[in-house]
Image (cartoon, rainbow over all chains, first blue to last red; front, top):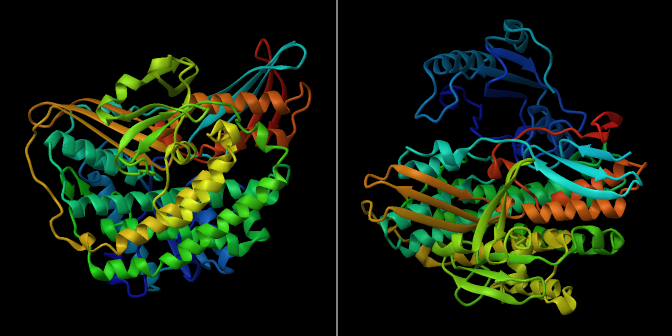
Length: 136
Length: 475
């Protein structure tokens, strides 16, 4: 939906964040990581900055901050703004689709991110939706 | 007073684990163990699902090995349907299996292990990682990432999507290949081959630099187990099981994969969730064997691609009289030979006109109540065994994962490194890193073998015999 309605936006669906994503992300102005998360019970928006330590770069998968750090380190440029949008994941068993609540939240987030891409809202406004500490 | 040193969690591996080192009153290492402290139990909760769902379920075990599970699950499904899949489907499955080797091996070498090699085991742990590697040699790091991307690209092109592709199914594959996709992938081959050769050259130059350390990195005789082609060539998708001892003698050969449980048993220990597979004819402990790149390159008679075969001969020359390379450090070397092989073999397959065929799937009902699939995942031979009812509902599932098969050898490696480097009262960061690096030789995927993932700072504790912390170190 985002890819169709937002010219200039590139939507990637990935199982985990891997190093090769850095090449694609390095040339972007804005990155939004959208994740179903069990660590939050409400919609959670946090600003992501490039990781400055080992954390997030030590296993097979990277954290959002780890990917941004690779963008800077390998390609000399990272998105000027990066947000992590976490949607609460409530039902994690094997199933054909996501839970009704999560699907509803996805629709809401897609709308918010579309507005962000189109300049109809700002990262600051999104961050104020759910103030929380910065993610690495 | 005796002490226990705990390294928890172990870093730069996939999943959660810890290492404990037990020392006596004199400060001598008496034992060392690699504990896997995570559990998800896929085998149990697959019961009651339909056989056709297993590709989708098991590919979600792990973010690094989904393709291996998908292919092996499809092969178990072929067995239940009792079909021989079309030649095009088999070759397409072979190509995606090679892609899985490339992307996984590239990540292991460039991202996880190269920081040790290029920066040194004793370098500052704050920079001994991919970022330190970028500072040291940006182009090397970039090449590694692009090589991994090449493997991922093949998977995405074949499966039409990057994650959880339902492409391989019981009876074949869902989507055919086409000339445009083939030409796109062929254009990426030259750089991939160049990078594989560069990595080999770099690693071999490092062998000299680490000559004092290498003999301590899990150098012991064990058996090696893997699949080989009917003519003895390196195999990755099919074939029969071969068992070689540490002296290079083939002690069992041409074992049909359906007989795997006559040869491979699984033991459990109370201190780890990771099982301990062993070679049944010799019993638990004595039946320790290794799987994965080191085993595969050891047991095969030859590699049917020219550059990798030339490198295999150099590799085997290191074995000397043993005729098997027994040092776990050389997993890295074997891994790079396999990357080179996979790139060469992918090129050969891409030039094969059979790949563009449209007969890609055999269809049948449930014809057998038991299906077994096996393939060579990046870390070693992977078995899926399904028992189903007449409708294809799973009644029993057994997944034997490569990492688990290396469990006894990983423990032996940890013990050897601890005995060599630990000195009662001194724990240096470099020593701990060497012990972890011993585990990283095997590139264990604990997400697959028990199933979980996460980030892993290092936490080391020295405990006295009562379990009281006498010293602690955090990274």
